[in-house]
Every structure is written in structure tokens, then in C-alpha cells.
Length: 140
Image 1 (cartoon, rainbow, N blue to C red):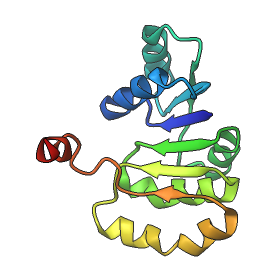
Image 2: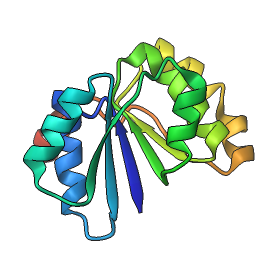
Image 3: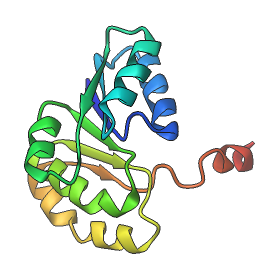
């Protein structure tokens, strides 16, 4: 499996990338960020031949679709206001999608895309970063 992490040089994304690199069934992890320098520096520190840095401005829809299409899953860890655009690009590319959350109003807009995702055979998981750590403590 090949997984692209958008906003990959950010603090939360760094934890995601590290976790993904511990999974045996993950063949490649793309660390894509607006800051190519930040993504490259993070990837260099990982010392993994399975991680690769990319520059992307997710507001460039066509370029985003081309990049996303090369992966099996895209994890969106950019600013939540970009969730709808990134999710739409993933659906258009036929790639599964995960995000950290849309603070309710954005999530409602994203849920309206359910049929488009279903028609494309794409699974979209929304709000996977909601209250990180809190659920673990409550479960314990």
C-alpha cells in the first residue's frame, strides 16, 4: 500500500508518518507539504527508503489530482478549510481519503459528497483526528 500524507511536515502529520512507516504492509509514504524544504528535512531524519518528500499546494486542484492519483490512500492533515477540496480531488482520482476533522460545518459539507465517493468506489473517513489521545484515556 502507498499512502500520501498532505501537510506531511506538520506536527500531527509527523506522528502519522512515523506510525505508517512501522506498518509492514505500507510500501511507501509520501510526505507532501507546501514547504518542500520542511518535507525534505523531515524525510531525511526518518532514514527510511520508503518515505519520499513532495511539494504541493493543495489549492492547485489539477496538480493535486495528479499527485493523489499515484497513491492508494491520501491522508489530509492540512488546514480543515481545505478538506472539501482535497476530498473532492481524492474522489476524482479514485483514491481513498482520510482527514483529521472539519469542525462540524466542514464535515457537513463533506458528507454531501457521499454519493460521489460511493460512485467512484472511494472510502472517505472524516474526523479521524478528533480529540487525539482523549479517546485512549477514556477507554483505559
